[in-house]
Amino acid sequence: MPEIDQLINFIFSNIDDESVSLKKRLKNGYRNYYLNVELEYQNNSSSNCSNAHDDFSIVIDNENGCLDIFSNFENLIIESKELCDKWSVVFEDYLSNNISKEFDKMIEKTFANSSQKNILREYKLQKINI
Image (cartoon, rainbow, N blue to C red; front, side, top):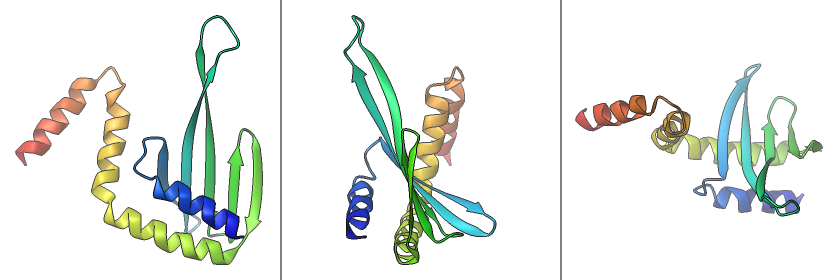
């Protein structure tokens, strides 16, 4: 599946984009990786412009040795232990080397849009003083 490999490579090469995220979850003793792209569409069909959101996700499911690709309530399962193994190593390496950065992004996203922005501000000040 070279086209799937190329797609994952392309998305992962844009990991610094705000719309791209990579997460790891442990399930039944297996490491699963979630490569997500948040898509935003502008709806011009009505008089007032609105934005619609969708996610495009590729899940590396190491328990079942497959990739689960889904978007907009459609999914495609690709059984490929080779791709799972390859991208699991790449993703694990990235996450291990960027744990502080990913943690900071998570905290920022969680509190930045909440009504408790003062908690984020205090956390950042405390972090500076450490």
